[in-house]
Length: 241
Ligand code: APR
Ligand code: ZN
Image (cartoon, rainbow, N blue to C red; front, side, top):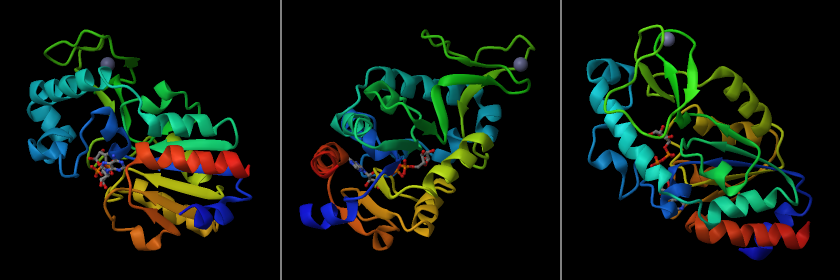
């Protein structure tokens, strides 16, 4: 792996990471579709849609409380920390589908949360937004305007925050190397980011213990976990930069 990576990365100035649930798996946060997938015990469509929320706000709110509790107990792992460390050597941007904030906790300073954040809440009708208080109410709290508050995350069928998405495309279209770690690449539009990078002749490197639907498009697909492979990759960058 070393030689193959080294000559492709020699002149890299700007690295963009696209990450998914798999990068937080070694922090104890289950993925959605992997073998220990979160969706195993729940029907995704029953929980992560605006209709599900209006139909049963208590169930959806409690599910997010459960996930928030799990996330609050989680620590960034060696994969998150390796990405944060790379900022000392190169221009790094993280485009994450995760809502757990672990990249920022690890020290990454350039993180775009494509699917929102589990610690943020917003009003279902006015433009009120806030960071969530730590104690979680059983029911979705009410906004000053009287409507219920919801997690500020992107649900199935909802559009991504346009300012974030536009910036993500700019970053993906201007990098030398894109490292795609811990995502099945089944959810759009996040799964189009490698295509923008490819259009800019970027080197595409995937890190995933399993093959994905885009493995064949990659210059290099490392069949490994991110907490193992990312520190190794960063040590190579450190050596050649
Ligand atoms: N290291 C790297 N990759 C891993 C690890 C690990 N330790 N463990 C699992 N994986 C891989 C799995 O093989 C899988 O390909 O991580 C991927 C996780 O895929 P998903 O569970 O589909 O998660 P993700 O790609 O982030 O889902 C995208 O879908 O459910 C929505 O909004 C949700 O943001 C999420 C989006
Ligand atoms: Zn309101």
